[in-house]
Picture 1 (cartoon, helix red, strand yellow):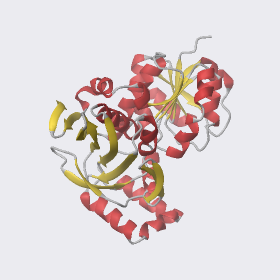
Picture 2: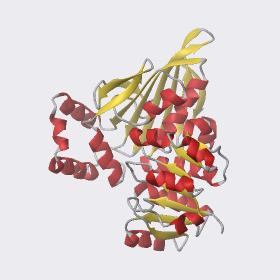
Picture 3: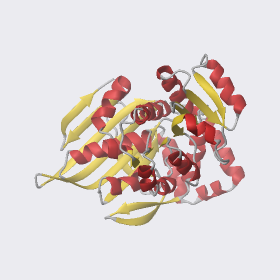
Picture 4: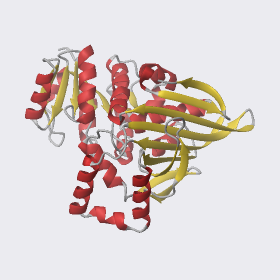
Length: 366
């Protein structure tokens, strides 16, 4: 029996649709948009003239083994709270890829490394924008130094962009949480949306104050790249909205988000409010040493449409996984890919500017 199907769980969601569409152009009839609603999956399939096929699948129920017998790869676009489905994939010889930013879940999947190797499959994590492109830019920064002591990642999202429902809910839920970060090699607890720093995103975007946010890259990179201090921060293109959220966090009002009615109202308003544009910007500030001298590396990436960039990075990774180019085991993006390979794939979709001590080493504009 040929194992050549690609199953995208959450495939009719905001990011999943883009991933399905791109992959179905290369592998028509082999791509399945899967999820709980067969009706939504079928409606999406019909728009693709049959290149994408529908599949009803609930991640909270056991998967029919016959589905996995024909699957070469599963791409997960939904959040999970345990590794049951991941391990089922591995045990059936199915490659697995996940675009979640949930650090606690990713650390659970990491524990499956030996199991993945034993079944001769690959599980690929930290795939997307943040984590994903941020991880690869961090890798690039470390490669421009002999030793990296500290890494600060800042991400700016456009409020006018189209964000998927799940992404909006996740963002709102994280605004009032505590997060664990690694400082000087040790885990410490910090509050989300506090401790702002000014990030210079460069031409066309400018300087924004960004605040701590629980993206998983800041917990992964200390392990994968051996950096003792890593932080990731978030801001929006509307400085007013960013300042307002930080102010509400300071006076404690954001704790009200734990109340379902308040949370749901905020989620709805985020979905409707289009105060800004659709720009996306990443800034990586790294400090360390090179040739015995203190060195600072700055990496800037600018583009548009968060979901498109997430999906573009996911398709890049999926193609390598589908072609079985990667080693067996559980890996994050920065452990198996280089920034330059991703840079070539993204092409004209992004501006990139990389500097070492103020001297440009990579520059390209849309």
